[in-house]
Length: 313
Image (cartoon, rainbow, N blue to C red):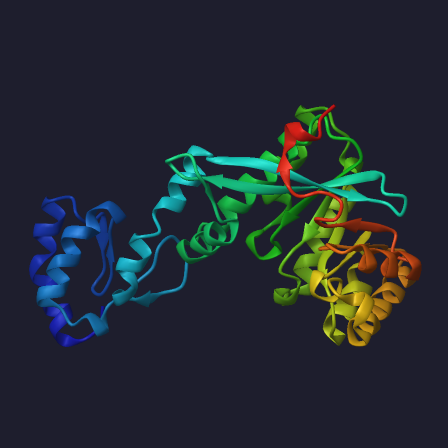
């Protein structure tokens, strides 16, 4: 809190807040409070404080204007999803040029308290806002590894590099889970998602190096147009390169998309990365990409995401 008025008011009521166990500790301008206790204090703030001079944060996230508190509170449901592990795993097949299934991508689906499925995008956005991205990403990664038992071929699992602070600590649980279910690390391919948001290249290389040393493989997802993407491909030399679906869908009749697809194909082959085209819905796009040299394919044309039991023999 800042401002003479706010600091004076807080100084006057600190003893009351301590007596009511509303705060755990304090400094001259900061209160440390349980989130569950903030509702009643929020009402007091609205009546007696200058809100423009109050900021808050949850966990170790960035400070935000206190006027955002109501919105932040409305996203508490994502904490319950993580705590209660309300997640189920779907899979989508990845095929070779002959149409045979060579791998599956694991896709997390989240369950509302009423049993309905939630939008993955909505859940991840809520987790990012709440500062729970690490916990959610870890949950998805662990559940995907466990659910993959019985599936043949490679298992592609998404992960968000920015949610991993230290590979040695954050990724150890992934290795332990693979050991527990008796599946070789070489079966798993970890996909780097949010490719365009990779700012700390050395951190990413550290993560991928940690996985590679332990026998896992990795893929670069959403690869597309742009010098930075090509440079990232050359820097990290992924085992698989996944061409972004926006350059896949309609590629058979679009010269600009064809140019991007060809450039990315050549860049992948230069670093011995298996080129994979995702988001294929039309046969003509599949044929064009196949004939140009892409080796693996994924999309509705070959199968939609479905519960794991659909694919287990």
